[in-house]
Length: 378
Image 1 (tube, helix red, strand yellow):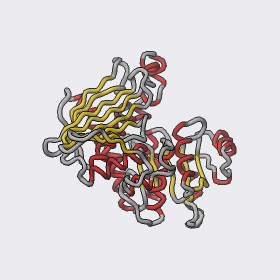
Image 2 (spheres, rainbow, N blue to C red):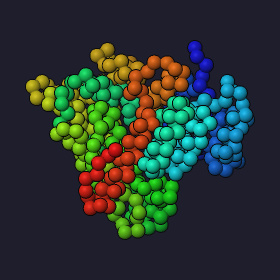
Image 3 (cartoon, one colour):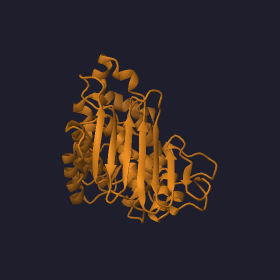
Image 4 (spheres, rainbow, N blue to C red):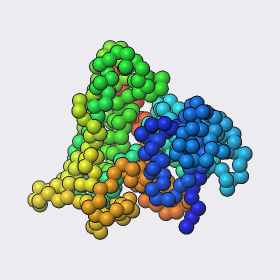
């Protein structure tokens, strides 16, 4: 068996949900070993957390600059190979850029950067570095999402006519109506979160889901965003009309003030031969619809599924697979790329997905501010 890939982690300490998700995902397929980290801004907390999760403390560094400096002193066969960037949004770009410039591969949380210009700079940096870069659009790792992608690629739906994707959460509802709370939440602070809250945090997942599953690029968008209060600088809800080449059109609905909603990502895709529907909160069911046949339901683990779907399935049919497994499938794809092994281009979102995402985020904000006008995506 190949040696485990040496993994470093930036951020994700304490009770961070995203930290737990990445750490568990990295362990599921036995490909990675966490050997170094800066989990927390305070060094004492950093060390304490490393001990708590049983990570050796000899390569727990006081800050990011020390992380880079000390790792670069090590021989190549000891140095960290890939680093997961799990920090708040505003730190993604400087950290990812410096990691690439020093020859590290990167697994980066989304949004990849806080501006489209930063994303293009990072893309140019990767082209020089020639390492591996993944953006963790987690939901692309679900077996039934991958099955949908492969079936569309094979022509199962014919020509795509309509796409309807929504991502509804309600967690900001108790926050947004309290002036003190909305002023102290980092996701509502442009200095830390970037230009957008809702579209930057979850709308970009919905956008990525459209392009990942259909294989089509969104050509233009028209957005209507909701800020709810005059003193709130960040969108917390919005609707986006999307256009593709030809006559295909769609709608993207995203909200963090959808009272009572949990993590309601769902997508429906309609072609001239049939339709697909999938929901993240019930991820093991891909609904296949037709004008002249009964409703079909595809489930993971069965031989009728595609190779890409089956490679991301770890349990026999009837055993639920969830978000940890989905993220783990992305880590598995990155491991193959780092080792130079053959992999399907749907196994992990790439730098280009990150660049497209930032283009989408900035365009939605511009469309809204311009009076709900159509904006072309690059």
